[in-house]
Length: 160
Image (cartoon, rainbow, N blue to C red):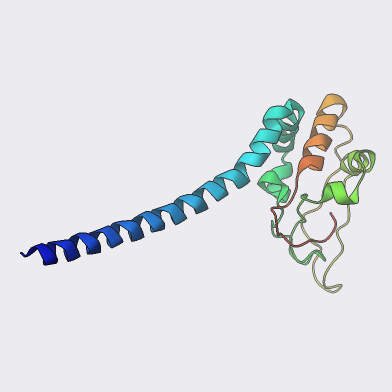
């Protein structure tokens, strides 16, 4: 192998190495961006233990069964006017005051409007929690729900 061909080989390998580093950098940047999205709520909870307690109340009383983990919604509710799904809770702070939200939890939502008036009743509705959740648990739950926010760029959904 001549010196000239060795130089071309080294140049080609250097370019290949540079391309590999660029690809790895891109993948790492995407991974870090995803990590930062999930890290923000953890930081907020770490700074405010009430949010972590509220999240525990959310799970304890089964709110996540219908509203999904993190209150993102999307659980199927056949023939519900809300698009056949249970609404998410990511925008309750835009719709309710703390007192209104606590009252909504206490009283529940006994009737869910039908998408098709001739169709079946939607099977899921929110029961009243007035005899179950109160005091500090209610304050913690309301604080947690008011802290939920959609991811950046997510379209505004219907009210809860």
